[in-house]
Structure formats: structure tokens, C-alpha cells
Length: 448
Ligand SMILES: *Cc1c(COP(=O)(O)O)cnc(C)c1O
Image (cartoon, rainbow, N blue to C red; front, side, top):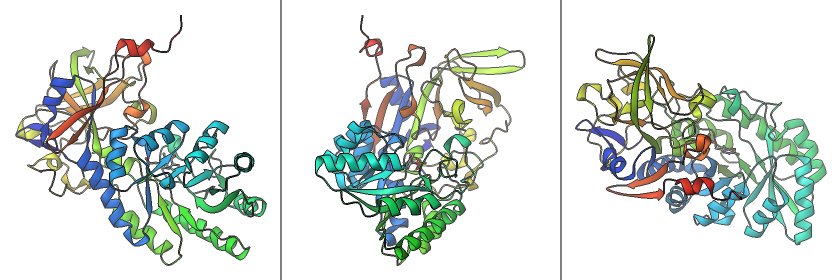
């Protein structure tokens, strides 16, 4: 699952005690495990090996250059959704032909930047965008490759803010319209329309929505073939789940692969995958210190130095993040985070099997029930509500788990809070890969 386990009651990231890093770098602090990134990438690559897929890590899930470089070194390409992300992917050493570019609102400047960089595929989301892409490609005298993003109208059964594959979504076009799209643009010289892209939502914690979406998409590809349009590439997007230490069952890469591979086997399609969360979520934690304890009526608050500006997922999606002290008595260590796991050993498999009674909000003897909140002036500023925790005191270090995806990338300077530092751990080595912002950073760019 990941490389964050307790050793002698102290939380380790690979071979380093997280407390030692927090003491040097301060909090709040994002901490990433290079070997967790690698093992997640390899699990997906191995699970889908039969299809020889191009794996394009979704930059928007965790964009730090050093994180991208770890994956680049594994052979990963990149899925980008803006010119800024394309810039990052290239800075990280990304091979242009393994970069795919999605997004409903690509600007002329972004399209030009991507053409100049000679990326692999434009994932086109509308007729208007296609017209614009054709115009710019002709103007440049360049031939580019495009995949049409389709919307197979399946319900990924995820949060309504992260569902993207339903018919009334702003993303892609529906299957009926896709046929007309190929009639109109399938024989355009400057833009070779030769792929189909889908990304149905995130996280999709079951295999059925993929099977349903792909089945419909393959029917479309067959109909297009009959009409004389050869689709060479299918990009099945991202959305694979990650284990958030709650009681939700999440398929592992091999289970997604077992359902998906039979559908694509023998079709001669180039397959692209765009995993984000399933690689980066478990690879990062947010470290924060308890500032104060406060009792209001019956309610216990644990006030920490991280806030919604650092990790907005609980406020935005009602997302669950497991929060646990970095130093705890032996009997409070959740079973699946026990052990002497060295980073070279195989990490425990993600499943609910290792859970103990203290994991899921049921207070055991000697525990407290508290809201874990930050200093931002919003009632929505919480990281957990009604959460069972071992007793904590001001100054204690807490780990917010599974924070590697959509964590730092969604952070802001709200309340003029400098953004957190980011650290990458690799075995027994660690280094700051983004320094903590200063007050000077906060006003940089402001003009008198
Ligand atoms: C966000 C996104 C992804 C990655 O989603 P995850 O759930 O993080 O795997 C992949 N493709 C596209 C087009 C996206 O917008």
C-alpha cells in the first residue's frame, strides 16, 4: 500500500522518522515517499503489461517536479490539463511524445505551446476546439494527432464534483455526437483524428463503470471502422481509487486490469492510461502540529497548524483522511501500519483486512472524539469531524494520511498563509523539494 509505517511507536516514511524531518523543516509539511510512487507505478505497469500501455501520470494530482522526475525515471509519460502543467512535464524531463493534453478550454497560446513541443496527443473536447486546433495547425504547417474525448454516459458513483463521464458533463461529447464528429473531422489533413479518450471520474472505486464505459466506447470504435475511420489509440483516463484508510473497499491495479484487459485484448489499439491518485495519493502525507485543544460545550476541538488552504479535500468533497499522531503507544498503532517494513520489502496490500477498531472513528478505551480544525476563518476549515484519536497534546505531530493527491496542488494562500514545504524521501535520504513560502512570496507580484 505505502511506505508509512510505525516502528517503535514512531511513524516512519521509508527509513526516516517523520518527526526528524518535521523538526528540521517545520510544519505544515507535505512528505512524499519516492518508493511508494515507484511501487504504485510498477503495479499499474505490471498489471496492464499485456496491453503494453503508455502510462501518463496525471500531473494535476501531484505536480512537484521531483515527484514527476521519479515517475519519469520509471518510464512514465504525463497527462496535462494546462500550459503550466505541460511546462512542468517538460521541465521534469517528460518525453513530448508521451504527453497527452486534455481540458475543455485550451487557449491558443496553450495549443501553440503544445504543438511547438510536439506532444503525443491533443485530447479534444468539442467541435469548437477542433476547429481552432485545425486552424492553428494549418497556420503552423504542422500535422498533429488528436483523440476525441467521449462521454460514455456511465455513472462512476463518485462525488458529484468529480464525476465527469455522464451525458450532461462539460467534458467530451456523447457517443452519438462522436460519430458525427468523425464524419466532419475524421479526414482532416492538419489534425489526424485517430484516438478516443475517456475519463469518467475520480475516484472510481469499482471496476464496473470502466467495463460499461469501455464496452460502449469499443462499440463506437467498431462503428467508426465500418464507416472507414481507423481509431489507433484508446486513452482510458485515470480515476483508479486509492485506499484512504476508511472502510471503503478499493480495487487494486490488478483488479482493474483483470476487468479491462479482456475488452482490449487483440484489438491492436495503442492503450494510454492516465493514473493520478492511484499513484500519488498514498505516496504523500501532510504533517501538522497540534496548536491548542479547545472544548466548546460537548465538542472537543483539536486545533492544528494546517488548514483548508493546505488540504481542501475535506471541505470541498467531504473527503476522509485518516489522521493519527506521528508518535503513539504501541496499542494505538493500526494493524496495517505496524511493522518493520523496509522500503525494499513489498508493502502491504490495500484492503480493509488490516483494520483495527481504532481506525474508523470508533473510540476505544482512552481515546478522544474530536473535530480536527485549522486556523482559517471559515467553519468549513476542518480536516476531520467527530474523529476518534489517541489522546493528543499541544505540540504533538499529527500525520494526515493519503494526502499526496489533490493535496498541495490545491493549496492556496487564503488568509495570507504561506504554502507548506514539500519534502521527498527516498530510502534513508530526504530533501526539501519545494521550500516553504515566505511572507515575501505572498506579496511578490503585487504592484504599488
Ligand atoms: C484528473 C484527471 C486524471 C487523473 O485522475 P485520477 O483520479 O487522479 O487518476 C486523468 N485524466 C484526466 C483527463 C483528468 O482530468
